[in-house]
Image 1 (spheres, helix red, strand yellow):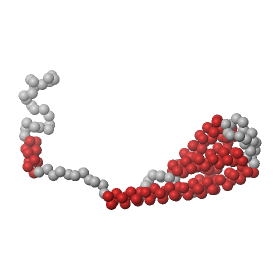
Image 2 (cartoon, helix red, strand yellow):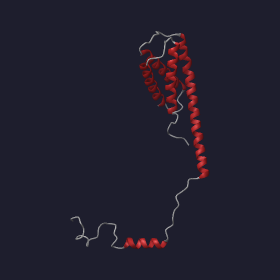
Image 3 (cartoon, rainbow, N blue to C red):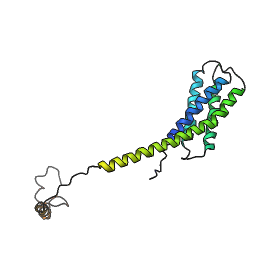
Image 4 (cartoon, rainbow, N blue to C red):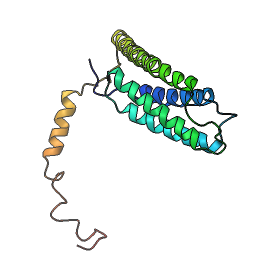
Length: 183
């Protein structure tokens, strides 16, 4: 039984956003940045990585690895740019270590994210099968029905057929004088 919803979209989005931010900070440090990034740079980085994660979560299930790698690359670039915009940015240009860190992290990150996506999907399907198997064995208790004796049904039918108990409205006469509301 296949579900029309993609349960792995959240895992994919969080993984891509987190990996983009982590690699951006790592590569930024390998590129010669001195010290801890400023709080404004980190806020920009978190916002950029959240946006990249949301975009990655919109991809359909089983999207090609190239699309995941492309989003990772864009996320790392945006994250690295966010870190570079902050005050106290000391390094200029690209270093070999920074470029290598980005180029190695993109395919490895895509592979790890795809593996997590597949593993999460298998775990969900296993839990669903287990729940179905347990419910099938235990069963869902149904509400007990109380049979109504035929004599009670006959009494109800007789009451409903009487002209005094009508389902269409108030009686034609007799209640006008004693009714508190004006007619």
